[in-house]
Length: 258
Image (cartoon, rainbow, N blue to C red):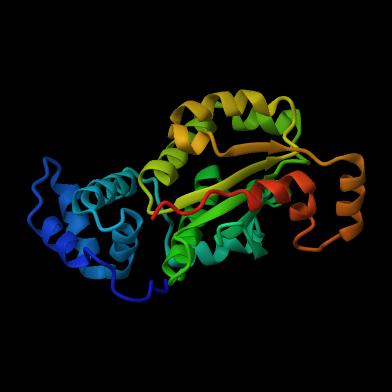
């Protein structure tokens, strides 16, 4: 993992607050103090995310390590190296209207990763690792991302497989981690060409998202000409982002709050 650059206001206060923090869960407290010693640059990302608020930093960090202890968090470096080779997520060459990186998620690649024997937890934990690494490398850029999920190849059978109790639990747990216990601010969240059946998944996930996050989700679709253009582009990395509705949603991404 690379590191965030430069000192952040409130870092010393956060370190002191964690060192003197009393917690009813000894394992959580030990994990928080271990993080301070072993991952100070990751702690800096938490401080930056909450604009230097010591109390908010401690609360957010506590939530994050609690999820990790429960098995919901980034995988190891070696596991990530293997799992990320499937290309489920990539960075677009352009940024959103507020300057955030744009992550494009491929459902075809996700299906291929699952077909190769990986679980949804493998997929999610590898991409939490990837997002953490992206934030650590962020430097002075806006501390967040915009996301585009392209679901044009998602079938009813795919939706059904994602709606099983175990699959839903994995998705909901990682959704809670990433939206309520992770030092990342989200800009535009775009779902492209979702099938009608996707509504059942959205109905399950939306209630666990913070209201402000759910309000940023845009459902977009390709027009006939857009589909032809994307197909003609073949492997062009930004073909998905050339869809007019997607481009407009990314351009209108809200400014960072801090």
